[in-house]
Image 1 (cartoon, rainbow, N blue to C red):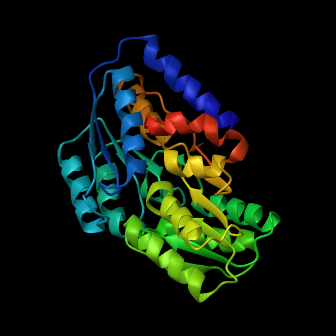
Image 2 (spheres, helix red, strand yellow; image 1 turned 90 degrees about the vertical axis):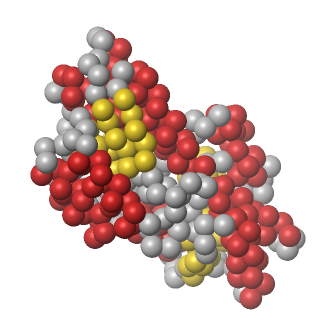
Image 3 (cartoon, helix red, strand yellow; image 1 turned 90 degrees about the horizontal axis):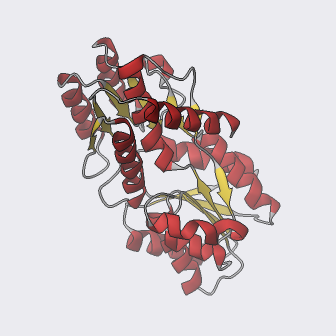
Length: 307
């Protein structure tokens, strides 16, 4: 956390130290339109634009679509912005477009996903968390509190970062974990989780990979079956899932602080365009486990689109 705090402080101080020149920074993310997680990222990017005076254009496909996302990156490159921020959920699909940006001399920072592949593409640095390591931490904690058989609910099949979360979870949990694939639809998630529990009553641990779209419907499915013995955790935050943690219906949420993932890359690129400044390495924005003792404090900020 020391490195993260230092980076945040540096960005804040430098952003206000002198009037910034007008810059154009484009953000291309993979988040689907119905996923509140990405609204928080967008809010962080917008605030960085306000603080630095940069013009920020946030773009994303309507659904998880790597072809559409690569086209958005190509279009951004053609506009020759002062900086480009990208998420990298699929390096094979997006790599050519990202390398094209780097070859065109556009400074590129990655955020959220792609920490393990960004440097080889020429990306300057990454702001986010190690998805695999975060999964390991979740698995270890759920095993420590007594979990014995687990499922991992993947609501965005094809996103390599989510595959890494489930794989890390299995390692940390200490045994094989069944992956339950679903669509990005809370109703389907609830139905699939309920079916998984009904088909195997020995399942006592569930890791969801997104709080609002998967975590909350997982809690609803468990409640509907009257299974108060099931340990539930989820990546990311939502007011509803945090309330479940505060009420003891869920165990913890994994906070990767996506507001910072939106804010810091824009601030860094604006400072780079104006003054040639750039941190010397990646910035870890998470993971942070939010348990019952702290969930209530975060609920209001989550509802405001900050946490």
